[in-house]
Image (cartoon, rainbow, N blue to C red; front, side, top):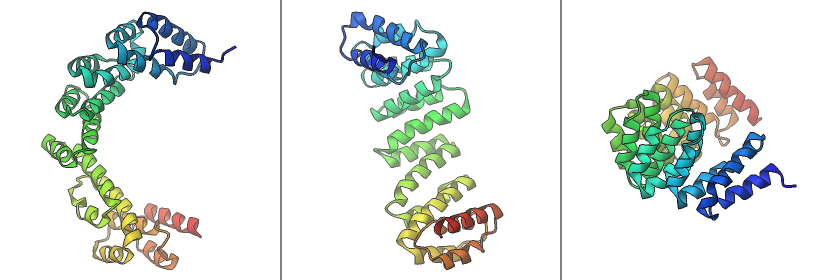
Length: 272
């Protein structure tokens, strides 16, 4: 007999091609496999395939489920509608409640931004009352936008006045920049408001800078005042295999924070 995995995969695949009249029955059978303890990874195919052909019918079925299950199935529907009927997608996303509703809104915000509707994506975020969830959705929208227009993403972040959002967008851009021009990335670190974020980013950028220009890194270290920023930069340098062990040990002894110093020593020991 077929295993639950094979049954689920077969039924999930049918969602892309079976007659629409059969879809409620297919959905019921998939849910029965779940209830029997079968795996759930194929459930996404159910609403993904159904939504592409009949989003209204898929949504009607989702709304027959218990509230705590609905959000899991709504993501593929609102993602599909974000391209073809964005206002309907927004209405559905904002109406989503219960466990998983934030994930639905994230998928929606990302899909809207990917389709060029950045204002609509930000409106999803701004309609959410919880500040942490709002920030999560704003990040989702602007990170998606940054893939095609980094400048506009950063401008929108700055226009929001939210330093956490600005830091998040700028950090993401500097990580990308560091891969090709770590020195330019280091020059923009002062734009990061959060000290902890700035130090963590500096540590990672210094690691890439040291691999390209070890002498330039040493010059930068010499110009840095003692503190968390310099400690993190040294840790980044110690992580570079090309840094001589004796030089690295001399640098480690200059680290002021005992915790960071221990981290650096562990790195050195691992290299031996």
